[in-house]
Image (cartoon, rainbow, N blue to C red; front, side):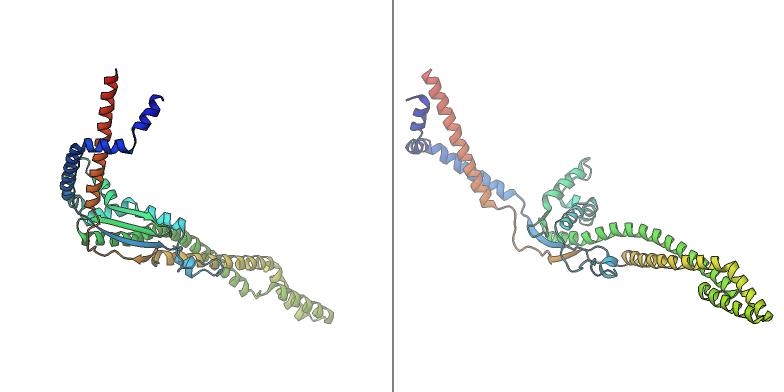
Length: 339
């Protein structure tokens, strides 16, 4: 039997029990000592209370597209919950510096977390405290959970609810900035197009003042009347009709060009007007960006620390480390003795 097999045979359950019994006093002292120390340490850990808000992101952001679009097949359902993409966007906004800064300033978190304001790393320490006490995560149901830990249960609930509210104000602010720029562009194009349409309309009115209202029908009727007048030899009628034909000849092509272009430009103007009105709605009106499943409320009992777990885990870990250390020491002694 080689050394490896012998060690395996020796290290059986009976030997382990014998080993524990042999060192029982040392292990008992270590266990009691660890139990007492971990109990004292756990009592010094500051208690914290947890408040939670659960949100579902909305699928729609644009009021005009959701409510004012002419195409019913492409309209977004304003009552639909968002999916993975919307949940990820919500998480990015909740983790933004804007929300963190507003919460830190409103609740004076530097003082609340006992951070020295003269410390040159105060912002880093504040960020670390914020990250450790305020977390955001996506659930398996594609909702987003805001969890806040604080020494004050009321403060924890207030911070959680404020963060949920700031999500909307932050997202709407971002969208409104873009929509405002879009509105400026669309308004400029709309006013220019409206001016072009008005100019063409005025030009057609001038041509109308010469007696030309409908090129095709007037040209056909006047030509027919002119032929009849010639066949009858009616010089007076011939002269009057020649004046009309002269007007048609001089302004007919211009009239047709203006009329056709005006029809096209009016269609473009209507499209721009629709975009302008829709963008204006997006700038001036607000649509909630989330569904709140549950608001935060002050917790009735602490969530952190769980002292008995700290004590049990610390005691078990110290006993295990003590056993391993004693085994190593004994093996080293036996190895040196055999030498």
